[in-house]
Image 1 (tube, helix red, strand yellow):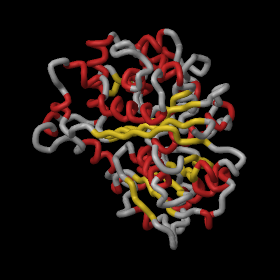
Image 2 (image 1 turned 90 degrees about the vertical axis):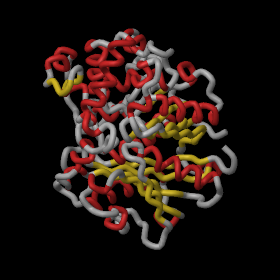
Image 3 (image 1 turned 120 degrees about the vertical axis):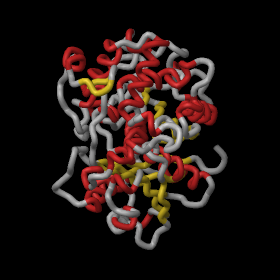
Image 4 (image 1 turned 30 degrees about the vertical axis):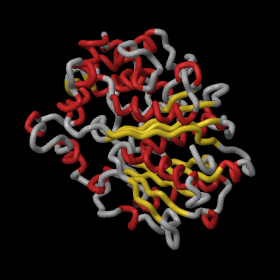
Length: 393
């Protein structure tokens, strides 16, 4: 990256729940922002601009929610930039902030993520009308059936089984028990997963993420300023990519291609190039991947170059991505245990920053110095990737 290197000074988040009836939406944002500023040892007066990351407005039930929450995140009198790339919004927010900092436009930027689907009855309509309205909507796909289609292809081409998916679910739920902010905090077994309610074959209830309300925030600044603070995480590489809209256009001669999202591979490759990473499997210490379904996490092992094409299940079979494995994935529990959609990518980014700062609490990975955070949205259409390090360039 040219220009000043960007860094993360602090991260704040709320507890995630199906509905936070105790606070209004601006108060929810205020919780996250207050915690981020305190964690960064930064005053609101030091913030030069705010990037507000929020997914479709129908999820909040309020048009332009950044206007509603302006006072709550300290945006009065400051430049405010709204970012929206569907589920990838939370990853696009810090990426935009880092580019603004590296370009010398602003020195210190606050990134705020929000999602409150409990406030509207219309959120499900987004998921049933997200596909191409001319060529694909009559197929009657939605998010669950669309991901089930991915899983069925993984089974056909790569040997994915219910055992593999159950292991991922148990791993992530177990990790979430260490995270006080996780939405779902319960002990489950592989038997529980296999006996949970069927949604769309082969997906079951415990293979999937919850619907969560919540907010998150990070304070970002230049590496030079970060060096004066007690702790920081440094942005080493960033990538983002978008794929074509229609699912049919992603299928070619090899029908397995839809099972492994190529746009995530494009985004990760760009982030690795910027960070100087040539062997992600060996160089990364921890990964916070945005994978709301168990089968997707395994697919992402391959698109992130943690496993060769078609061999993501081997990381499951060897336990490599467990907390005590050599490449822990979502030690926080990930979005299978908390998914405030528009903010989820920002949570992954913030959790990765905490890991390389050595401040992730009970779910800290020992010796983590280099971390990857991802986000995805739009039925495998938009992706971001960010590499964070314990030391500046």
